[in-house]
Length: 137
Image (cartoon, rainbow, N blue to C red; front, side, top):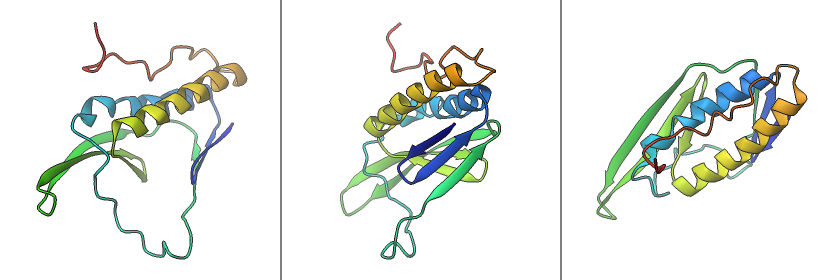
């Protein structure tokens, strides 16, 4: 199954791989407190010539690490917050809650499709539905 999200194309070979990738992104949610979309983006060399495209083949879910970051912006006199998700050789930067929620909505559709398409479709529980500080008990 091939999923394209912007300039990232992800190929999944099993429902288990889909669930592993989604579960890694779900762990970012609790660390998003304070993120408001104003985080610095790393400079991209060659951006004036075109946009980078990435293709990832997920055979399984690599280990992941969630790293909350912040820095004080003296020009704006405020602290900027963001979260980096390190998954194997790729680092995903999550800068705001709205973008994160939109990504998770897409992943929910990917999960429903994967469970219906792959032979190992026994992964019916959506790994993105994890109760945390944002949910009401």
